[in-house]
Image (cartoon, rainbow over all chains, first blue to last red; front, side):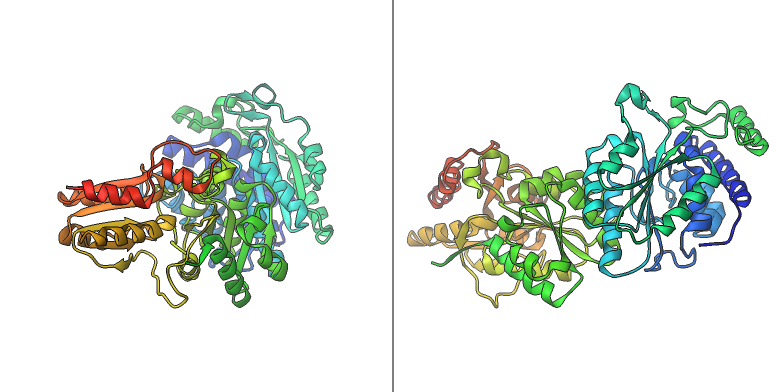
Length: 279
Length: 308
C-alpha cells in the first residue's frame, strides 16, 4: 500500500498505456485492446494497492497478481518494468526470441506468479494461492484479472465455487467487462447475462464500477479493505472500453490482437498524451 | 499370494507422509473414498481440499498452492486426471515445472465393471507427451508406497497411476525404488520381458512357465515410463536381443512404444508388444478384459515361443 493520489495514478496509467502501444508497435504483434481496457485497474494494483518488492519478486508474503486473461500481458509487463522488476529497456523485447516477455506470460519473467494464456485457467490458480494464504495464516492477498469473454470458460465457475467454499476474503477479482471478444461482441458470441448477478449467486461480494475511472477503482479497493475479514471473495465488475484512450481502437474488436502501423502508432501516442477520452 | 490394490499403497503412504510434512496436501475431486484418501481427509483435515466434481479446477488450484510452497497431490481417476485435466496440467503445472503430483487411481482396465468411460487406456501416452512430466506406474502395493515417497522427494510434476483392483504383492517393505531406474526382478539370457504395473506379475508367471522349457527370461519392472531407463533397455538389447513389453495400456504411446523408440534408434534388437489393442474397454470382469487384449500369462508364453 503506497501513498499516491488519484491524479498521480492517472498519469502512471497514461505512461503505461504509452508503453503498451510502443511495445506492441515494436513487436508488430500483441494484444493492445484488452491491455488498454485493464490499464487503470492494473495501475491501481501495482502502484497503490499491492504489497510487492521489485528487488525480491518471490518474496513469500507478497500480494499475488494473476492475469488470467494472459494475452493482455503487455500492460502487466509495462507495470513490472516501470517498477523495476527488470530493467525497463527489456520492455523493447516483447515477443522476441530469448525475451522473458513471452507472448503470453510465464514464470521466467520476474513478477509473474503463474503462467497464463489459455483462458479460464489462471483464476483457479489464484484460488489455490488464496487457499495457501489461509492455510499458512498469512495476510497476503490475491488479485486476479479476468476477461468477460473468458467468463465463458466453465473452469471460471468451478474456481468461483471453490472461492466461496473456502471463504476466500483475501481474493479480489476484477472482471474486465469490455463487451468485446475476438469474433464480435459478447452478446453476439455468447451472452454473459449479468456477470455481477452470476458472481453474487456464487457467494461473491460484487462491486459494479466504471473500470476505467481511477477514482472509482481506488474507492472500491478502499471499501474492499474494510471487508477484509467477512469470509467472502470479492469481485469488481469493471465496465471498461476495449482500446481505451485511443480513438480508432476504442470498441473495435479487431484491435484485440493486431499491432498499429507507424502512422497509427504516432497518432495513438499523441492521443494518449492529450488524454483522449479521459478529459 | 497376497493381493492388494496399488491405490491402497498410495492411500497408506500419503497418510504417513502427510503426518510428517504439513506441506503435503491432498486435492480431491469428490472421489477420495474410492482413491483411498478418506483417512487422510479425516485425520489431516487442514491438509485436505475437496474441490468437488471439478477436475480442471483441481489442477489449477493445485498449481496455485504449489507456487506457495505446498506439495499438492491431485487425486482422481487416471482417465480424468490425464484427460479432463490435461491442458491444465500442461499449462499450469508442467510448463512452469511446479511441484504438483497427479495421483490417478483406476488405471488401465482395472475399473473393469465401470466400462470404457472409466478405463484409462491412453493416459500414459498423453502424460508422456508433455514436457517436464514424469510418469510412473508401480507394480504392487509396496512399490506404490516407495514410489509415492520418491515422488515427494523429487521436485516437479509427476503423474502416478494406480490400480483399482487388488494385484499380487511381489515386493516387500524394504525393496528400494528409484524414479527413472528400472527394477530387475530376475536375470535371464534368452528373452527379456519389460513390464509395468499390473502386468509385472503376469510377466513373472510367464517367465516361470518358460523356464520349464529351459528358456531363461529376464524380467524388468519398468515402473517409470518417463524418463525411461534407457540403459536398462539397451542392456536387454545388447545382451539378449529379444524383448517383449507388457502393459495395461494401449499398445500405442505407452511402455511398448517407449521401449521401441530406444530399440529403433539402436538399430538392433527385436520387440513384441503386448497391451490393449487400440480399442476401448467395456463392462466385464478385469481378467476377461485383459484376456480379450491378449494381456495374459498364456499369451506372453505363446508370444515368447513364437519369437524368432
